[in-house]
Length: 122
Image 1 (spheres, rainbow, N blue to C red):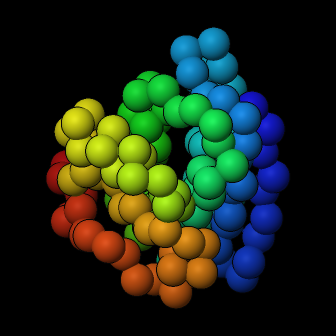
Image 2 (cartoon, helix red, strand yellow; image 1 turned 90 degrees about the vertical axis):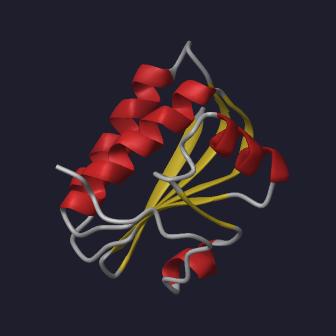
């Protein structure tokens, strides 16, 4: 896995490539947590997964957990992917109520989500 982190105003953009699976999920978790910590409300935190060749379900779970923490802080986490399989995996894993999927970084930075996961609960 490789990643580049960029700041755009209050937004933070993580462009990830390679593979995220059980062998490197701890590194992925740290990367996403550090990016989240560095994001200032109102954010957003944008995870561009278009260059990822493979993302295991554990990687999606990390994003869903961090998305909940972000919402609590007033930050929106967007997952950017134009691959239909990503949307299917998110739905099959039951994470579609947690993750905001968009098809482009511009869409995420423009604040136009495809679906709203609702308020953060407790």
